[in-house]
Image 1 (cartoon, rainbow, N blue to C red):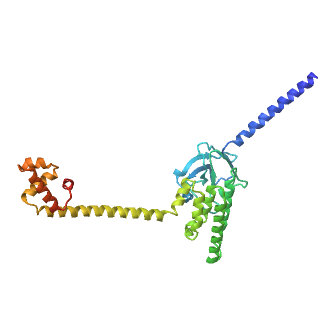
Image 2 (cartoon, rainbow, N blue to C red):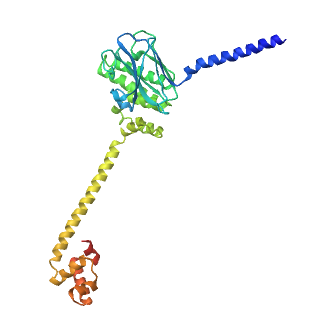
Image 3 (cartoon, rainbow, N blue to C red):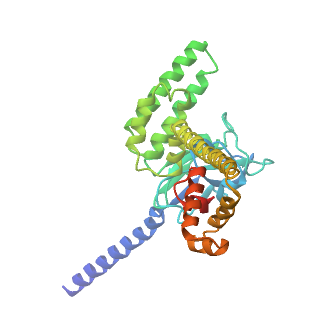
Length: 334
């Protein structure tokens, strides 16, 4: 009986140990990050670069300043990026590799040698990038681990089909295909729950060409995502309100210039009018006018010119009448 209990005890400990081993083996795979397992031929440098794309208009821009991290690809084709330094919110990223002899910041767009791939992630997600074909280009890599990237890949596939169709057929056929694709992208943008995927779909549709035709759609789209304050949406919003903003600013600038100009003209006019009127004052009135400019009181003027206060008042009244002024304060301001 005791032996049986000991056996069960050892079995229980063995199960606990096995469970701990499995947990420890699974734990690294559950960590956030970007994990790669790819197969490249000798034409490529064994280094992969991670870039943060600040807005969708610069998604095809490449410079060393865009690269935030790089990782070596080992002999088995594996690489890893820690994402602990990435922001909490979703952002648009790009990985790329370069061919031997090319600068690290080289971007090859289209064709079998296309060397980059877009994806969306944040610091809490796990992205896995893999390839099954030896020597395959980055465009053939499979990216899994964060649902929005499945939709992103689908959009890219559709866009590639449209690009291929542009090389064949008549102009009318190409326009019909492009219009159908743009309509499909608007539908996807309208129904998708991820802000960046929705916005990416609109950029793929070349929305600049039809934003006036479908203005109500874009206004509704912006209203739907009005809480989004990322640089991606700020730049997109600016595409639809620059005319209003510019017109308002130009109107304000014009109004300001008019007011300033009117003020200067009025000042010059008043100054000339005052100077002309001063010339009509008597010698004594001009003397008193000078003292009024300095802010002297009637009593001080009386003492300065050795004349009675009532006489000063009479002169002041005459001066104001000739200069068409209501009070002596207007003389002091001038």
